[in-house]
Length: 118
Length: 116
Image (cartoon, rainbow over all chains, first blue to last red; front, side, top):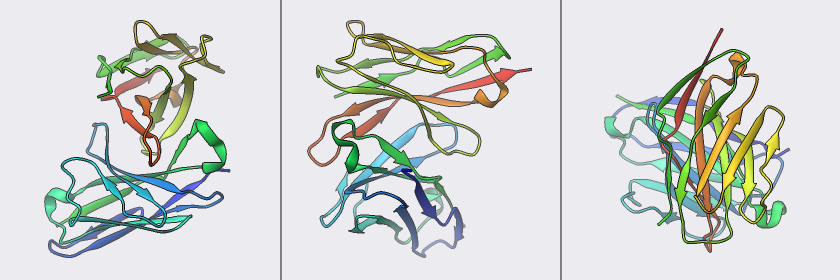
């Protein structure tokens, strides 16, 4: 149990276009999902926390209008990179919290999405 | 603010030997969780082991064990009988309590290479 999927696994787009990445919890409900960005050989940087039915909470320095997050259901959160530029090229990872696990609040990670902006 | 420090950017170990990865953290909280995650070349994050701060006993999962020193704010990971499949980047993480869903603060990571 506790499987998180991401789609697409990789995407190449032209500069100026928008790209949507989906994160799904396949066998549990996730009231909270998290979006991370990771550059090669570096750590995961939290971008935002996504809560079902409410606005996402962004970390300091992350542009809300650039990275649009929607958490419309208990199993799906989406990240849209708007007007993408080459510097947005990165590996994006989502995670989901299984609310059944109570206070422990373990996060389960998706396999990641590699975005390349030409 | 909580910070997590991993002072070893890269480490190597011979197959079947034991290796210890270090991690220190800084927090003013008394109750929290600590984790070690593994990220192999596939880049899928995999939970290796977790420790709850209120438990004095060190967590163990098969060949993986931790040395949790709460007063020293230290949380090292020991891998026994290292296997080639252990080659990965290892992240130490602190779980920070938030209203909207506890968030993880990661260290910079340690690249571990297991040699045959």
